[in-house]
Amino acid sequence: MAHDHAHEHPKQELSSLTEQLRRKALKITGPRRRILDLLRNQPHPMTNKEVFAALGEGCDLATIYRSMHMLVGMGMVKRYDFGDGVARFELVSEGGDDHHHHLICRECSKIIEIDECFPGEFQDQIAAASGYRDVTHTLEFFGVCPTCQ
Image (cartoon, rainbow, N blue to C red):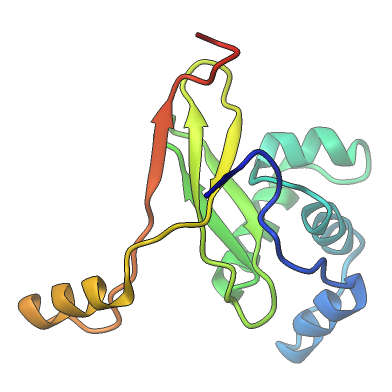
């Protein structure tokens, strides 16, 4: 089912997020804390520039790029590519079981979340036929929303 709102996952406490950094022996810097706090309150993936604009002063764009790269590497943030050459980032809930897809308007970039997915057996068939292991997927849909029509 498509949703015009955020994917339904419980909002993580900021203390839980910073504890994940501590477990990896990483510093809890002010910018990292602010980025995590922003992402945990966002309904949809954000670009680095959107994060920069939302945070205002006190966090430069280079720090945001480095932090996002680090958070993706840790598995705390997922990186999305919606085909426009701009990476978008979304917080992953601890445990990482919030798999979903997006429907993006090609005109205004409005994002709707899609809960339906392929049956797990389909990925298993692809893995068995190809000899690959740990097969995953990303799937994004594009169209023109009713407002832009």
